[in-house]
Amino acid sequence: MSTGRAEWTVMTWNLQGAKRTDLDRVVKVIAGGSPDVVLLQEIREPQADQLAEELSMTAAWVEKHHPFRPFHRTRAEGAATLTPHTLDDAGHARISDAMSMRSYRRRIVQWALIERGDGSACRTFNVHLSPHDFEEERRIEANRVNDIALSFEDGYPIVVGGDFNDADTGEIVDILPGVEHVPSPPTNPSGDPTDRLDHVLVPSTAVDVSVFVPAGGAEWSELSDHLPLTVQFTLAEDERDEPSG
Image (cartoon, helix red, strand yellow):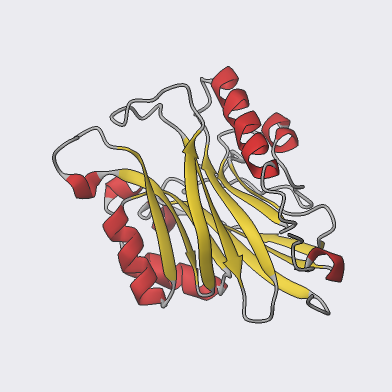
């Protein structure tokens, strides 16, 4: 059992990797936040590998869809979890009814167990839900993520982050496990953000929760149509107990 309190920093960012964003700039943004976990959406595997190498992190990447199958393997779009700590028990599942690996309508959830050297740990879930015009699909996907997350009965605190595509309705945040202690600022479009699409949900017992999103502008539009969102929080001692079993 761990003692004391653990401060965590989690960043989520839809990187729109098909635009071949400037990874050197992305490295500087991520490094500036000193995150324990980075949850990335719309990222290609070579991009995830490069970021992990330059940030001295471990990466787990999973394919979401690939319209050019079976050619151009490196163009596949997916999700990635990066951490400077130990990354274990990584996995993923399809959460959409759309199954074809060629279809952008296919949606997944990625999970991983992040264990720090101080004994604290979190199980993270990385999501990119269906866009605005598909409300029912997005609701179904969120419920499936909730069911998957709650199926882990090992006692690790749950953190859910990503691009919820929820257009400020609040419904998706209520369905998913965890709490948004501080509402997300607008993250899209990155040049002049007006929509709250990106979120990080943390345990209800978390304290000292703060949220940071850059102000946006033309320089951010060059990287992605989304801004990165960073959430800092502290897990109380009872959230850091070793899981039973």
